[in-house]
Amino acid sequence: MQNRKLVVVFFILTLSIFGLTSCEQIIKKNNFEHAGGTLNFAVDHWNENASIFDARSSSEYQVLQQIFEGLVALDPVKLVIKPRLAVKWNISPDGKIYRFHLRKGIVFHQHPEIKEDIILSAEDIVFSIEQACKKTENGAHLAYQSIFKDLLKGAKEFHNGEAESISGLSFRKNRIEIELLKRDVNFLKKLAQPIAAIYSKKAHQLLGDNHLGTGPFKLYARKKRAENDCVILAKNEKYYEKDNNKNKLPYLDTIIVRIENDKSKQLEMFKNEEIDCINQLPPAEIGSFIGEENLDKFNQNPPIYQLNKQEITGTSFYYLNLRKKIFEDVRIRKALNYAIDREAIVSKILNYQAHSIGDGGIIPPAAFSGYDSEKAKSHGYTFQPEKAKRLFAQAGYPNGKDFPIIHIKFNVGTLHSDVAKEIANQLKETLNIEVILDGVSFEEKIHDQIYANGDLFRSSWFAEYNSPESFLMTAYGRTVPKDSSLPSMTNHSRYQNEAFDALFEMAKSTPEIVERYKSFVEAESILMEDAPYIILWYEETIKIVYSKVRNLSLNEMNSYSFKNVYLKEWSKKEWETKEKR
Image (tube, rainbow, N blue to C red):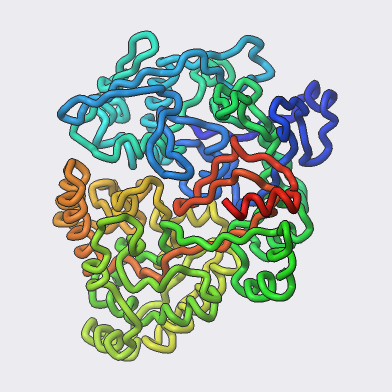
């Protein structure tokens, strides 16, 4: 499938009706007492050229989760799988066959050029999965690489052009069957990701439009101006869900998604009430903003601001491009790890806005109940400059002599720039090596990392589903293409270790969670011993929300659902009653 711009043209008729000259409210039809209004929030970036099957950042996920739905979804509070487009399902005893029963009467978002309602059918499910599995100009979609490639029966043959359809997909009326090649205990969790979303076959075939989903909000427009870059999401009037009192969801009329990668500018927007919540405070301004400057706004009754400090299942790290000959020696990789003072980065650059330093594995400690993070931590790295120098000398580069200049590639933004500068300074001071900083746009960094165009890359990984597999998949060697000129969609370091891969595969198919976690821990220990990553810190976020934003669920996976959100100022009596509960 060719990537198409995920953008809606401002149609003349729509403009004449709404008179839309800026990012503003569109619809005024309320059924719930407090329904209506516009929620404003900000994301760091938005790639309008990307297919939904290639979404890879939390910013993209936060928007796409409002527009698209899959067969199943992740509950935003309990983080468990729940029905979505499929109302129920059953799984064969061997774990290979999933039979889904679709909801009836689900309507896709309306399109100005299609007058009649487009009703969801089983054909749309098959079509969307086939589109995810098709070859692209870049090789393959992320959804194919990370979900379907070695799991869905017939997906590889379809992708390679050896079959006209995917043999593991079949449907009859409102039922669809998916057959896997092997058991995968996390398959339902993978189907809950935005990259496994469903869109309209009819709209795609008639208009080449692949943005018509079934979610509570529809993509209305993208507006680009120097100081007002935003995506507008409008209420899906034909959304099927209702609240417990039979009121139609969603409550909001519109969501305005401001696009701004500068956290300081996001904070200014929040102060000026241009956005209703901020996902992360700029580290340098944490103390002043939540201190005396705004203390009354947090403490008054009722408050204006609400603060939520939360660990999230995310890890910030750098990874080494193992296609570079200089990084083939594990002593070099370990030396770089031992040369980094993570405490200094967390204190000086992040102002302690992190859950903890990255002295363990890639999986955040205590992210998954019952997972033995301590074992992986025993293979982790702390700041040991003398050991780093000794390993460097053993590898043939005493005091950095004759070691080539390396480039750090990162997406521009205050935090990432400052971290890169600090790491460059530390590597110079400890190992006497020269580092060049290469700040690029997020889109350019993604392109370069999947094509291995660079040496050392800034990265972060957030759990896409609540399993250690979601992190360890970044090192699964069998996803690395044999042709080095092709993109590697998930394993960007191009790390390969047969022992790791065997343990990873064993864990994915092991039904019993204790044994499954044992295999994952062993795999992670191998990964850390091989040191293709420099783990820096485990994520924590400080979110500030205007208290008038009701029902906004915040969770450790940093995912959002806005369909139950409404806006209403608190009275003093109402707030006191809430606090007593």
